[in-house]
Length: 251
Image (cartoon, rainbow, N blue to C red; front, side):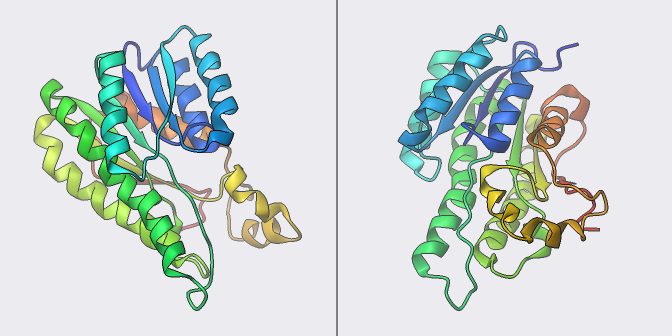
């Protein structure tokens, strides 16, 4: 059974990692997918993903767009509405990390992380709520992190941005619930992606694995499965929640 048949989903930052896994999972369940990438170096991967999704029998299109730019988000959403006709699901997944101890963290590093991780969620949500309100339905899924719930040395900017997403998610859920628009957050733990590749150097991975009851890092599909649940009618009575997908790291 396909859970997202005839739905249209936006996924930001989907050329790789968690975003790619979500785009594939949604397409497997019948959703048309519009997704973004920002770096010209990701164009080849984005094009390959677009073709992979189309081969699954859905409509799909890759857009080079910066989620950390308000005007770019506005143009992107307008293009998606023109091309796809509707937006039923929005996954705010774009994110970066620039880890540094606070003593060494520069204002530029701080602003970059806050802009891409947190401001982008506001920019995209601001644009997609109008068509969702008109349709009186929608699911917004924001990618937070267990680091936003726990904090972590050397990740003050990342933790602040992801904690901000949680407060934003809960507020939006209260504002838009009466319009049948749900807003939830997913808080992954350590996931095997390019962003966490550095943990495989030396004994980095083993240092974190001892704190994870399940004893392993997540796969992108583990996060995508939760996104599918929240995007579909299976999650129709869930809003304003933060679902940790961390193997027990934040118990």
